[in-house]
Length: 219
Ligand SMILES: O=C(O)CCC(=O)C(=O)O
Image 1 (cartoon, rainbow, N blue to C red):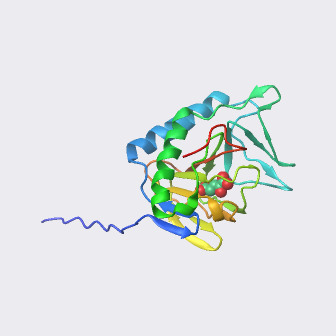
Image 2 (cartoon, helix red, strand yellow):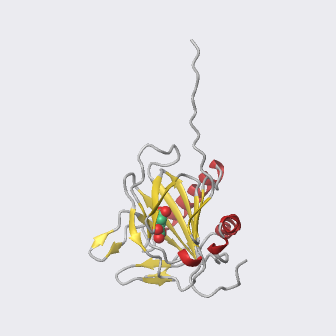
Image 3 (cartoon, helix red, strand yellow):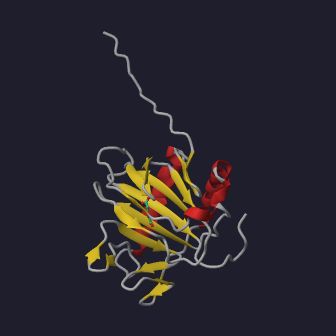
């Protein structure tokens, strides 16, 4: 008997979602994805048990479903503020390779929609871990003064990214940029889809941002 494998490949071209927001499917190779996940894990291990450890922040009276690790600046809640240290513990720095990735993502995104604007100087990053089924509600990234774009990378399980009512399927290795007119767009993610990834039991997202005025101007 002959077994014929049928592989369904659905084309996912790069696309502008709304003006200033771009989706770049499969931007990272499987090897790059694995290395970045390992890198994030290693940082999380280094700070485990300290006040800057990965945690599920309290927001208002509730607690987020996602686990957050802050790099560069610590995203504190109730009230919202950005801190350089927490109880005498330095926030882990943003790894140098994040800027290189952001540069590459932005260059590609600008080819799809120049409205994404200048490349951010990556001064802060959030590593968000979503257990299967968990997501993040709609919100606006408003803590940073900078109007330069947010660069977001996805690893592990699929999810739906919703921005201003537009839904996009995000898979492991995808990048999203929102800048220019979309910099303060409302966005969030639905629950990570169980069983969609051999890389992770859950979903990891790395979101990189510039905090304030450029330390050096972006390209
Ligand atoms: O997980 C994502 O793709 C989105 C994360 C997010 O919206 C944020 O960190 O502000």
